[in-house]
Image (cartoon, rainbow, N blue to C red; front, side, top):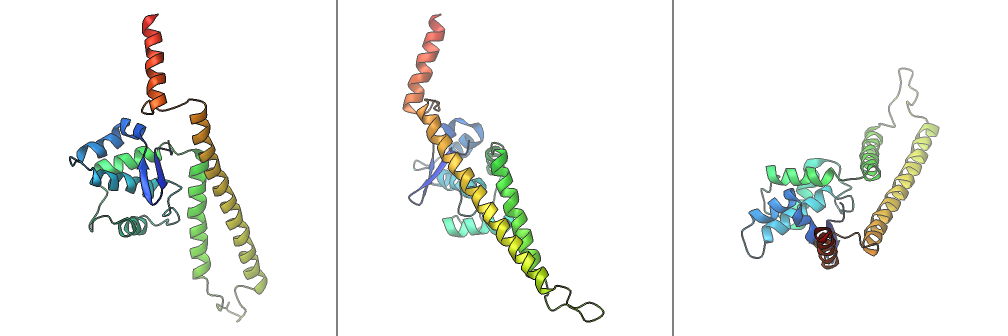
Amino acid sequence: MLNLFQYKDNEVIVCPEALLLEPIKKIWNRDKSKNKKTAMKELGFIYFYADPRSDYNYITNESEKIQSIVRGEGLSIGFEIDKDLQTAIDFYNSFKSIPVKLVETLLQTAQKYNNYINELDFNERDAKGRPLYSPNAIQSMIDKSGDYVMKYLDMEKNIFKKLEEDKYRARGQKDLGIADNDGVEFFLNNNNEENNE
């Protein structure tokens, strides 16, 4: 499912089979212009907002993420997620695998941990004037943070590698969407065989 959109050469590419899915098709069809510029921007927004490969994926605060995408991708000022767009986002998110969801959860946890460390006052003292955080405790937090970040980055890299392998493996095994040229031919041939029986 996460291969419905690709980002290549600074452009979001919508795979033809994505337009066969009702929530995505609705976004496409409501743009009555010939060039489908609004539809492409909205479908691009879905990619940037919901896809784990998005450059905006590191932003865990929802409103900050939306504003960053709007500014970074040239969407109109006052852009909002309407009902149809939210339905398409929810639909897209519903197909994320457990490992992808886990990476997103780990990123949110890392952000919370980062905020916690940033809010610590290392000069804070207890009632007897002793530091609340010893140098050993601070060093332990730093070490654990480094371990956590490395584990997160390694997991993220492996999941994205798996997503790419699955995309190419599926195409190599002729497990194609019916909107692909080979997929249409395969679909028609299989239906003709069934109808002739």
